[in-house]
Image (cartoon, rainbow, N blue to C red; front, side):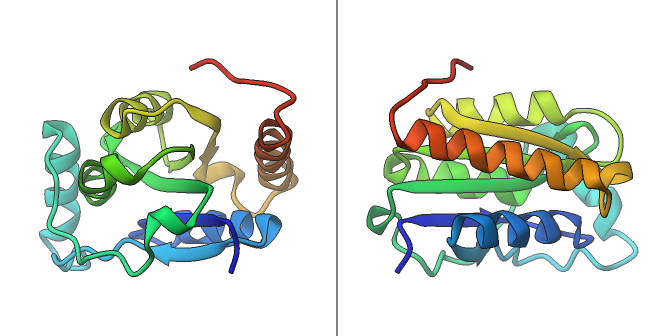
Length: 167
């Protein structure tokens, strides 16, 4: 078993793509946050934007992995209406007491990534050891590969105790 867990929620597949790449680079276990609401409907996307804007939490299924078995949890979210997604908000709120070392990433179509990452830190009660924002326009480009490599490098450096990042 790996000592790192990558946890993510993805509606369109963009965040999943980045989570899988990060998990592969870190040789980490992978877990998807499963929302109990079907967002792939006519009302799903507008509801997602409203939940993001209002800072609401959605109902999610219980996680499969025990966070106490991991040294690091990397959490990824899409940005909804320039805000943190409600499934990730719910996960961080529910798992707050179990999170000790974290790193965060997000995918965004427009703006709001910086705010989403700051909100993740606030909800989790943790300063991330690394963080990265990937725009939809960067997906499947060398820029994404470079950002993921830098993110993984920051995690590796911090894990060796060589540097501490301030948020």
